Length: 304
Image: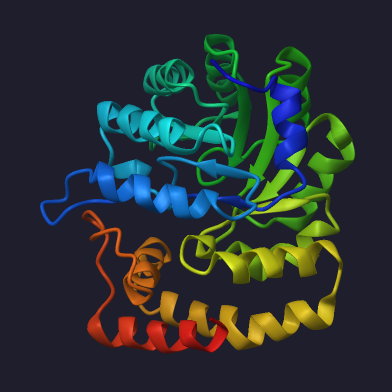
């Protein structure tokens, strides 16, 4: 049973840093529940506003529905009394509904609705897709503007009018005009979060467009740095943000960009670098090469 109403959840999430914890796997690429619990407990020991289990950084795209449900339930059991746990819903409309219902049954507080699998859809189809999921759950729903799910401002307004449990808009595209249109039309009806990889890079300019928070992948392995960065963003401290960009974030991006898919792999690499391994990534992702991991470890040492 959720602790927060959808609006209460939005109020909690909009003014704090959000994180997507990695999903721990063992050497055979099976879910490592014990290690996952340890990671979550560490993550929840810092003042983060919400944890999104089985999300993109958590390799949710590689999990079966049963695995996703287990990962979410484990997260709720381990840290749900400390920090709001949200789940992801994706794939076909039917699968997204199944994910949403399973998350609600597991005690999650909300849902991040990922783009539907593969197929292109016009605005009417996206409205039907989101509506079906919102109608299937009492949880707060956040739509993810990315890939084949680009929601026009008028579409978001229609959905917000129909569904009181639609609470958030996450952007993974970075189209400034589009973001401005959505915020201008919806205002405080929703909360807005940045979802570009790596979100810290865009956090300060997007704050001006109403995105008061973002999903931080690097929180997984440098949580205090990530929290300090978020504080600088919310304080509009451009000098402090730029220093952290130059000292860590931009060199981190340089490593991330060496191989496609490293935006997830580098997070698990970061945990390897600090001695808190969450195991390997699942195919089709690749683990960091030896030199990349060494470079990342040296970079982390500069801000630890």
